[in-house]
View (cartoon, protein in one colour):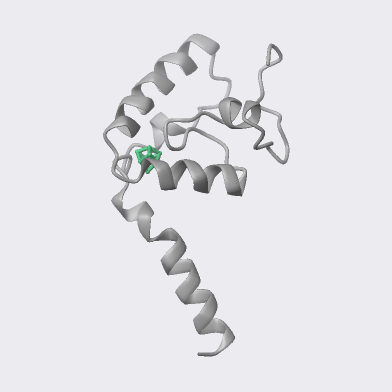
Length: 99
Ligand code: SF4
């Protein structure tokens, strides 16, 4: 197996769980719109958490987001919650001041 094949194989393996996500087609629930207000964020994230609660890949998703310093809500966990759990964002511009 050459280097390109290794990379392609690894990528396919690492991302295969994403195809099983219950959030497919619901991106608007998992990432904020520009200038989203706190109340709207709470409502949006509550809806997203309901989707995550029924998802079969939730644990894998949460670990992926923690490892890759993702933004948005992944595996039922917001970026604020990941940050507070010690999985720091690379550029934490979205972290609320109260945290
Ligand atoms: S746990 Fe939530 S964010 Fe992750 S794949 Fe499932 S529905 Fe999507």
